[in-house]
Length: 410
Image 1 (cartoon, helix red, strand yellow):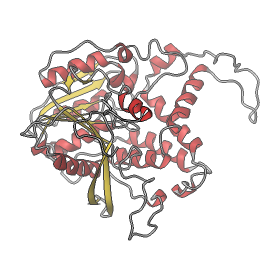
Image 2 (tube, rainbow, N blue to C red):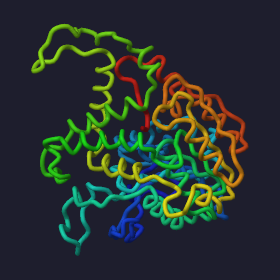
Image 3 (tube, rainbow, N blue to C red):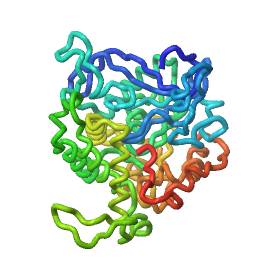
């Protein structure tokens, strides 16, 4: 938004950081990073907390406050609940009355930061057209460099904590390794020190699903139909890894979707769906309403690139200059980022840390669903007293109607 006061909370803003030289040697011109903020930066510039979203997450961590005169539809968007409502906000464990919270959209994303749908700047081949398939691959490290430029512009001298889960955890770790002098505390939740072969394999199948869509057009589809079928399929694959086998069995088992039958049908005219199939279809349909297929590829490729030790020797060497406080947490039922990956990270720190275990039947999504446990972990990290957990977070999974189970910010 333009023309809004700097004190406004939870409003999407944009900042141009200039040209950015990527790890692959390509220079991405006139880069813009979008972000939201809550709270007020102190005079020393050191009460900031950086919160980094997951794969298809956005900047809206907590509800904001719309300035007087804001159009009703815009105000409703600003004041809607965020994806970590109750964790971040006035009086919450990440207290926006005390901290200046910044949440940027990852480079390559589709929530305002420069990405494949952005227009190519004047003076470059294809100017005025979307980058599309010409958008270069970007890494986690590239995004962190862009976020560091944003932090400098905002007047931040250091972060009290950098916090991220899943892909956001990879970004948080990269922040501590790349800018150790700016990070006084780092929370890596449901993530690991590098993308594993299995994580790369899962990401690869998702990427192939998008690129195999007849409408993909090598990424240059913005003047025609989008590859929504491929994106929805990618989401189905990904969402399966976000939940645990035990939860899927408990919630769905072999139940048929209401008003459908799984008997009969042919290869050309499929049968009715099992409930778990309807559940995955729902999540695929929901993502295509809010996300760009090219951005999914860009951010997924960034996740594949994640390796904090790349170019730095071993992981211990990569983290040797970090003297920040560390909070490492893993979900016990996670089958995307296994707890032993968190343990490897914890053991490689200059001062080995204890891995905090989030107990959940939900799998990887537990880091978003088990709000009370996450709140206690972050309260301990920040030296705060845990607040009461909002029911809209703590009950997700057990009481939500089928098939509309939410994956929140993933």
